[in-house]
Length: 430
Image 1 (cartoon, one colour):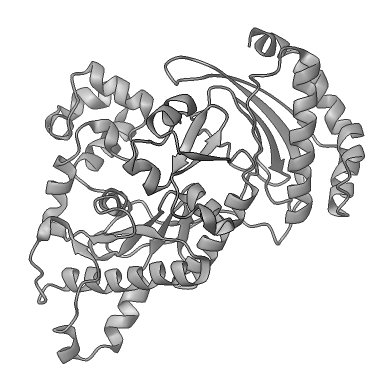
Image 2 (cartoon, rainbow, N blue to C red; image 1 turned 30 degrees about the vertical axis):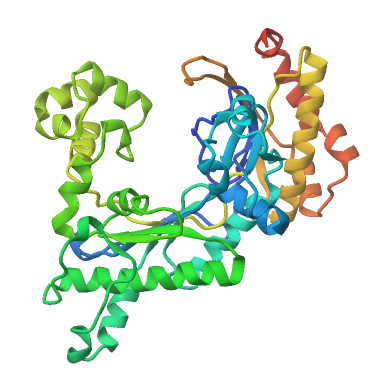
């Protein structure tokens, strides 16, 4: 996979290290704000006592498929899959009932479900636009929203819950009800202030989901808990288009319901492999493992963090994402068998990226190309090259110049081609 990035003049935008399901893909990434008083950066807000927080994780149902069904209502009751290259990256629930699964090979999906309707989802524009509409809508409920990919958001409702509680009379508190499910059917104690806060949070979450459906036509699940980790885990318990609240007493039950430590958000591929080598496979294994040995093997900070996660402890704040600090374009290079074809593909992707940069209005300063090489283990080796964008090109971007001729003839393109020569071995291998 490759990544071509553009970084802000002030401090580079974050380099997205996420691995895609695609074996070979190309991204043009890292567009950040230019140095100015108007530059927007991720903000970490102070949070109150962790146990009193109310965090909601909103996860949209089969997002790409929903966008396609909204665009073409005739697809709504048909088994639908969204195809990117040779994979069905998502499918609607009609298709899932017939055996189709996310990230299934297209050929296998058609064998499972001959009537499957496939739509090309390689152009992410409409998905991206709808994703930001969702985030903007959630920000109307609380300003503290953190995007997590196209289809997920964290929302910190702590202050909003506090305000609603202040508006309730004492006799009204006893009438507060839950919206949605309570995890593990736990009994609610209306004398417990933490229970009350989470119930109010569940009501706000229901309002969010109703607004998403009424205004955007989208359905989604929600998890309500006292931290991000637990909210994300509990949001997927009842699907689709449902929500679940997790009361503190059920935290360990939820954590122990996980089949493997790699299901804990925050424990990635490499860390999971290290833990498995130590004989740690289950959540209980991690909880009871020697902290000293874990610190020796993984380092103090990582060891302490993941062991806390195994107990459901997560004090990380919801981070205001603000405007995206990176834009990306990607494509498979499966059909590229020469350097010329690879360069032509880069030109196409670069033209699309520059159009988005112009529409955004901020000025990037660095473009980066990252190549990810295919591996059967879904684990990719990476090489990268980057070069500065000349100031006169930045000025032209600021004027909104978006013509394909400009994209192809700019010094930026020529410099990228110079860099590509050094990477041609990667292309010719595939």
